[in-house]
Image 1 (cartoon, one colour):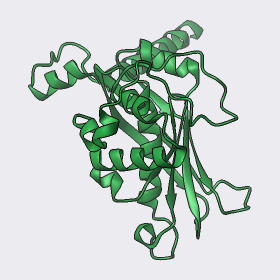
Image 2: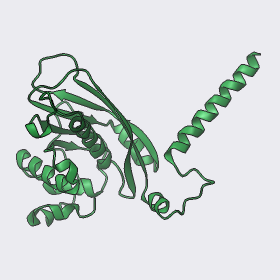
Image 3: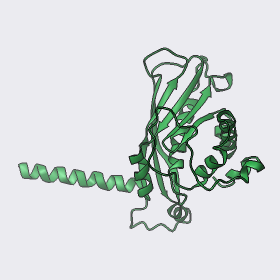
Image 4: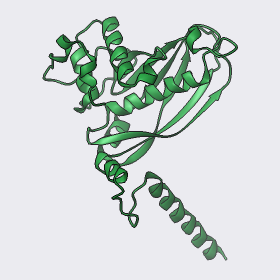
Length: 242
C-alpha cells in the first residue's frame, strides 16, 4: 500500500483530521461499533475523505484503490461502503466484464468478493502485519444476466478484536453476493474467502531466506500441528476403549 496517498488529489492529501474514524458510510442496519478504528494507511485514507459527499467519496476511493491495485481498477469496481465492520463493493454488468452468455464473468465475481473481504481485513490489521489470501471457494447456482452485483463483507467486533490481538492467524471473512436486479430468492453465488496475516518482519525474513526451519514459520504449520494433536488424542481414546 506504499504510495497510497500519492493517488489522491493534493488538497485532500494535505487534510488529515486528528481522529481516525469513518461512520458516514455505515449501513442503517449495521450496529454501532464500540471499537475504535486502528491507525493504518487504510483508515488514514478514510479519515481524509470522510467529510465528502457519499458520491464523491465513493468515486475518490474507487479511483485511489484502483490505481494502487491496477488489475482491480481495470474491472470498474466501485467502493460504496467502507467501514471497519462492513465493506460493500459493486460491479456493473457491462460488456467488458461479461462472459460468452452475457453474464458477469466468474473471475470478475471472484475478484469482487476478494476485494471486499481483503479490504475489510486490511481496515482492521495493524500496520506491522501483511495480509495474504490463503484459499477460496466460489459456487455458482444461477447466472447473473443483467444489472449490478455487490459483495458485502462484514466483521463483528469480536472478530475485529481477534484480528487485533493475534499477530499471526487466519480467518474466513463472511461475504454475501447480492444480485440487485433479480427477484429470485436463491443466492446466485456463495463464496468463502480464507485470509491469513503474518508480521511483516516474518515475511521479510522469508524473502531473505533467514527463517528457522526448526520453528513454526508457516501458517499451515499451526493447523497441521493442531490436526496431528487431535489425531493422537483420538488414537489414545481408541486404545483406552480396547
